[in-house]
Length: 343
Ligand code: NI
Image 1 (spheres, rainbow, N blue to C red):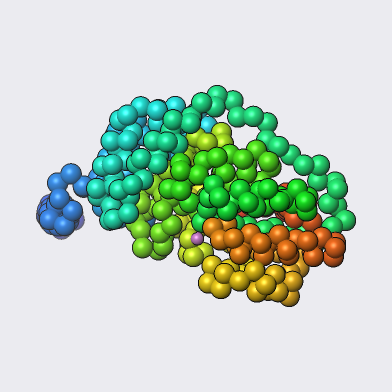
Image 2 (cartoon, rainbow, N blue to C red):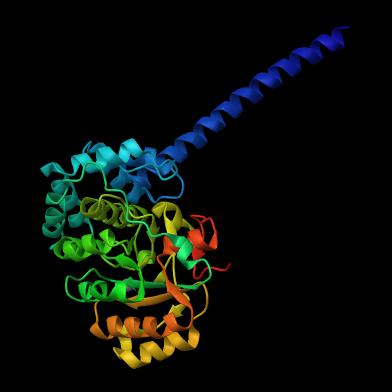
C-alpha cells in the first residue's frame, strides 16, 4: 500500500519534470528556428518561408504585385474568368505602367523599350465582346493528311503579311507563336492573321531562356504576353511555345497553358535558304507533323509556301494547332509537351 503511493508520487514528479523539460526544449528549438529564419530571410519575409516551390525572393515580388490592386495574377489552378477581365479592364489605367516599370527595374536588361510598345497595345483595347472566331468547316479535311506550319518570333508587319497574302492559294491556315514585346509595333499583322482564322500562341514576352528566370519572372513573361495579345485580338492564347523549347513541369504549371513544341526543325533562321527548307520539309513530313519556321525571314515564307504547293498535291492539308487537335480528336494536358499529333 505505502509502496504503491510512493511509486505514484515519484511517477507524478518524474512526469512533471519530463513535461517541463520537453516544453523547454520545444521552446528552445522554436526560438532557434525563428532566429535563423529572421537572419536568413529578413523581417518581412517570414511568411514567404512557409510557401513551398517559390523562392522567397520571387514570392516577395509576386506579393508586391498582388498588393498593387491594379494587377491581379490569375490563380494558377483556377482560371477565373472574372479575375482575368478585371486584369484587362484595369490595364487601361496608368498605374499599371508604373507597376510594370517597377518590375523592369528589378529585372535585368532588355525591358527599357517595352513599356512604349505595351502602351500602343493598350490603346488598341476597344474590344468589349470578342467577335466570333473565324472557323473553317473541318469536314473538308477529314480524308487529308494534316500538317501544322508554325511560325515563331514574329509578328512582323512585313514578312508575316507576305505569308498571309498567300495562304488562301493553298487553303492553308497556320499558327503563330508571337513574342509579346513585338506585338505593339506589329499589331496590324497580328490582328489580320487572327481575323483570317490563323491561330495565335505565346512565345513569351521577351524571348528569354525560361530556365534562367525565377517563378515570378516566368509568370510575368506569360501574363504580360497574354494580356498584350488579348488587347489586340480580343482573346488570350491558350498555347505556348517557350523559347528554345526550354520548359519543365514547373514552368508548365506556372504558364498554365498547353505547351506545343515541334518535330520538324527546318533551321530556317540559320541557313536562310528557301530550297533547303523545302527539301527538309518534303523529306521529313508526315501526317500530324508540327513544322517549326520563323516568319521574320523572306526565305522562310517562300520555303513554307513552296512546300505547301507540293504537299497539297500529295494530299496534305494545312491546319492550325486547334484544328489539328479537333481533327485528330485528341485532348491536351497542360503538363505535357506536344511535338506532333498521332491519330
Ligand atoms: Ni524563338
